[in-house]
Image (cartoon, rainbow, N blue to C red; front, side):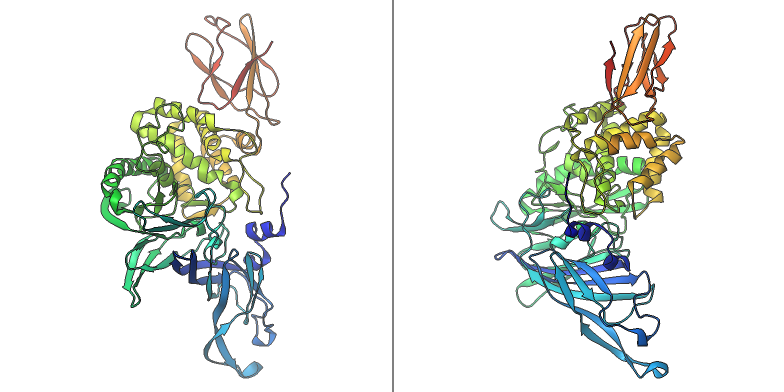
Length: 558
């Protein structure tokens, strides 16, 4: 059994030092030094107090430094200082008057990857305030991004610097100070200013709002997103980029499409991106609802790693190949004619970026739904039969090593099965609902009703049951919280057949569609107890074939 530390709790839970404030915006400035693999930067965090912080009723009750805020910044990065604009109040008690403001240097104490910052003055609930953090150092270097993340220092094929970051799971605090938990996104977006040598280009999320040539051979590029954004999605890309622009007429009007790739990859990128992006957007808007970030546009940015779902600036590193680096992950043949990274990582704009889980223990909401976006795309391109075959083929990647949902409060994901098993759970539920219009309405409804929100798995599960008009809770529990795959056991005697569920949780009673001869399908609702059914004429006593779209196993009893 895994053992977790106090540091895991600090990273993965709402500590008292995180509970009193809600992030409204990040303004990040960073300057990387490619030669030394170091960075220096500053981050302004604008926040709203969610409750009265000690002493806010009257100045007489101020206890300097009593309330502490948790700011996350992973070692070995160093905080140089934390500054805050404070009101200057003169007089005593009834004769208090505001004389202006001053910048105070706040005290803080480091606890490994956390800084506990002492506030000087009280803050009343709903009061908007800010602090600015200056920092520098050598950030953790990515070993095998995006899976083993950190700052990426690479050279392109021509030997020129190529830099970026991949930090999902590891956390954005690996390169900038923040409130590093998924449940608190900056409500009013973020800006990212990247200062690089004049010979390079810097790309960030959202739209370019300023490009400033400095007097020291560097240029500062400032990018901004208007929408809430996951901490780990705010990412710099630095290299010898070129760009081109396109537009897509979508459900909410004109969507700006911008592409940034290394100069020598321009023609390959135009062909690959031009083929897959617009059909993908048309398909996903039809199934999931409007692209969630029209204000910030859609971008693909060539990255020095395979790919990541960086909101409005999707990282692309699939080498302009079809499939997953040339392979069809499903083995069905249906995944070889389209670019896996474009489709999968863009699917995250709906599931992961628009809808974000509070805790990474529920990351199947990100990965399972997005993995299911792949068969949805196949269905749009090649039809339902092809999509069924693709989804069934994904099962070969399932290990059933541990539950899909991980432990809460310690920044720990569940099994990697959250991808293929999550997709096949959704495909199974689609069969149970047995109404594709209703199923599509649920997917679109999720993106509408939880638009730009952070949620839990339980909320999604309850939403499905409510909108489907069926209690799906046992199905979710079975596939998400155990490693058991339900086994449909049956036995045939004469013109009767008996069946039951085994290898399942108590009370599991998922209906399933089966073929019992003469190519006629019918629904049965097994339970964990044997049920017997007499069959009509034409039943040969030899055929009992469940619909393969249900992710189950089948066993003939002796």
